[in-house]
Length: 389
Ligand SMILES: NC(=O)c1ccc[n+]([C@@H]2O[C@H](COP(=O)([O-])OP(=O)(O)OC[C@H]3O[C@@H](n4cnc5c(N)ncnc54)[C@H](O)[C@@H]3O)[C@@H](O)[C@H]2O)c1
Ligand SMILES: [Fe+2]
Image (cartoon, rainbow, N blue to C red; front, top):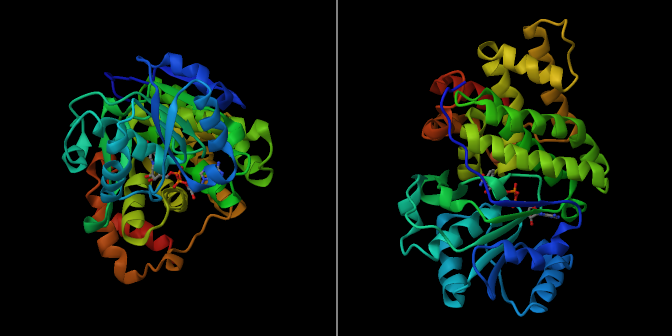
């Protein structure tokens, strides 16, 4: 636990199934009047009619909307620059709206600050390097999820380095978040599974982070309770509004927890899997989670045991090592129940790649520094090797 900490979050969170219908009313929450909005989204949201509904509601208030397409899944830094130059800059929007998964929310956050800072994105890789606040933003997540809607982070892929890197700045926080779990009812099972476990990882890694503090603990614990009780139900019965609402809230709390404390080795080891082998963020984290926690276990038994008890996996009478093991066993069970891939060979990884994967992960010092137990290159290789059964 750290003794001093700092926590900042978004101004407005509108929550509830169906709350996207309130979007036009909620424009009044922005700090200035807007009549031209760039809407960054993913094809699935156009196909299911959500975007047409939003555009019509905004047009009824005389707000002009430009739909921005072409943000890649887990976008590269060049892709974000190109879409900005070709679609955002010429339109000169007053505000940014994004409806989609973490890939488009992150791009939208960068568009917002790119509008007010005439500098290449590469200048901002790292922490607190963006000078001016961005254009006002409204973010609406449709996966549950990255929690990106409430974090000051945007993650971009650097293809030349085969790595993913974070841009972290308070200017990446939106003014308004709309959490409408009804948007996630048709989220396909593999995406429900991977993004749901990613959200759990945000909370568990924040809870065991060297930067954990009372604020992150509170959000992390409630997030893990919500996700722990609902992830299998959301996977098996996607149309359960109750399970989807719990996942959406749990994901948002996960974003608040990681804002306050930071993620750790699971995320650090996931980045090169994304950068080098295109394993999606959620899948990479979900694959690594049980193995990294087994590695961490002896350093954080009490904390893992507390989580196990909160999730009703262990009783107060069981010892910390026993209870901690029960949590790790549950994480492994999830990978089977949620059909998380367990073999990196399907992504083209072989034994010969382990050195460069470990070297890639070792570059993610920002997150490795939060891990409760230091990792050597050999430790990281051993963890990756568990995924080459
Ligand atoms: N900023 C942060 O704090 C933060 C945290 C974690 C991850 N990330 C980043 O977020 C990105 C991953 O985001 P993601 O996991 O949300 O995935 P994503 O945005 O890449 O979306 C995954 C897939 O799900 C589809 N999809 C999204 N919503 C849907 C819905 N409601 N119904 C049906 N299909 C839907 C998308 O079209 C896409 O094909 C990565 O780049 C990762 O690095 C950012
Ligand atoms: Fe994540």
